[in-house]
Length: 141
Image 1 (tube, rainbow, N blue to C red):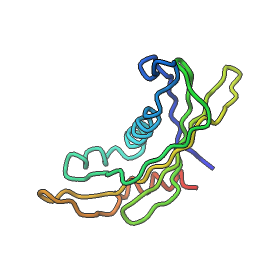
Image 2 (cartoon, rainbow, N blue to C red):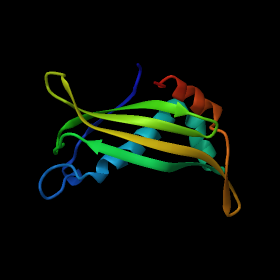
Image 3 (cartoon, helix red, strand yellow):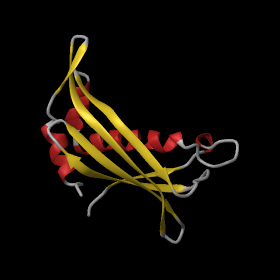
């Protein structure tokens, strides 16, 4: 199965006083992966975001198995697990990459977004943009 992949090096600012990565950063990285995915596969959606389209996060989670530390290299793999009319659910696997190119599963997360259109002060569901839908199908499991 094909995954969208994003590599990240943990910085010292992403760690807490104990020296491990603060748990909320995993959720922040999910958002970063989503943004870079849009840039790479559906750049027209970025333009649509300035014209009333919103991709609203409706659910997010992360299960932690191991800790990460400053300067760890993390490979974040994103998969689409469910695509409906106006929603997509994505799975995120966080893997620590070792120097010998081995990967260790550190955490696993999930996020669901809904495609919404702003109309004045309200929002209504709207179909996922076609370019985004087609791009997500490439990474569907």
